[in-house]
Image (cartoon, rainbow, N blue to C red; front, side, top):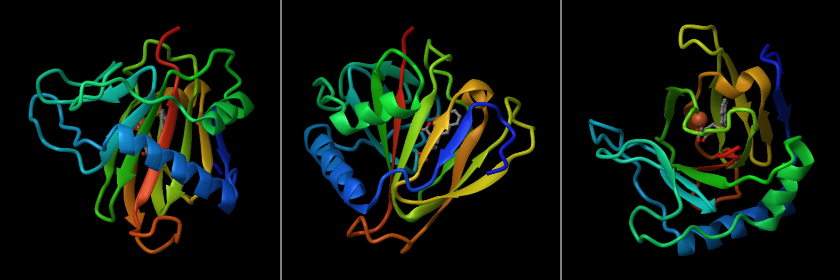
Length: 203
Ligand code: MD3
Ligand code: FE
């Protein structure tokens, strides 16, 4: 791609179809133990359009009262998050170039109408470790810009099995998901898109 941020790596088709199916089963097992929840915006309490869950020692959550944060418990059930699947730990070892393992894997589920507005990820104490993203299911229009909201952005259509590594300067780039393209994948029976992001939260 032509994103001019250092440390941005796009690995199209990293996971083949059988590997995507195996990963989807792992994600279903995670969601069976740690059900998808509705994240709400700080202060306004406005629900986001994506549904979320996590695996790992820490999970990213948000609600009206306490805002964006990482915590070791599911916000509804109060139980610990399930472990990060071994296949995702292997992915991190393969592409992250970071010696310590990921602590959090955020699972975002997008139905055909869901979006994610342009934002920066800066709730992690560790901003040197990259974020590693995996797309499953329907394609999306992903957008990434520079470290100022007003910087120009580039758009990229992400497909099932694609991996993106956000390191270096791209780690603090503004980014978001402008739209889902319904019916562009047969991986999820009922359509939609799943994004997994592996993160190191602490130094
Ligand atoms: C660029 N997720 O969970 S993944 C998020 O497709 C998030 O669900 C989007 O943004 C999604 O925070 C985009 C690609 C991604 C993930 C993390 C990044 C891009 C990033 C962190 C910094 C810069
Ligand atoms: Fe993000």
